[in-house]
Image (cartoon, rainbow, N blue to C red; front, side, top):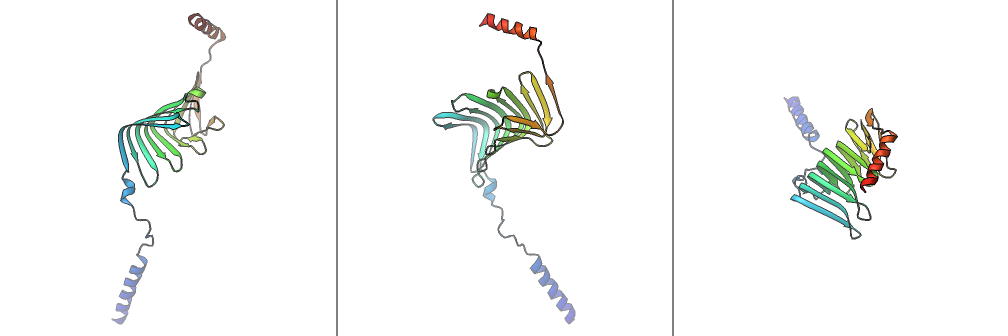
Length: 195
């Protein structure tokens, strides 16, 4: 009987000691999952040096206090160069902004036009790091780039805002339309006649 009591006491002590959680500091804060602000039919304009640098409209915008994140539903956005001239406009179904880390994630029906480069981008998922000026997609996400008469689609997309170069890490496909010289000359003559 003494041995039985000793085994039960050791078992209880063992279970009590080893079943306690050692992670006391990670209790979930219920406030972190609730937005600090929620806006509907929002229009946000940012100015730098007294010139508009960004314009964002969205169906809904939620802003969270703890991690500096914001989420926008059906977001239309425009960016302007230092002279106030429209440089980029686009749309995405969901925009996630981490302002502390300057990470912008775009999802769902993304369409972007970059006027200074005569470039269009369509995708379902993109991530932009403003600190490094890198735009990337998921490894298996298809991105289509169109410029003038060239269109290229592929996966594993990455682009550098610094070098203005882009690449695909996986198989790509595309279309290049070449006009013969005679058609180009005829088009130029027609433009001259009407202007």
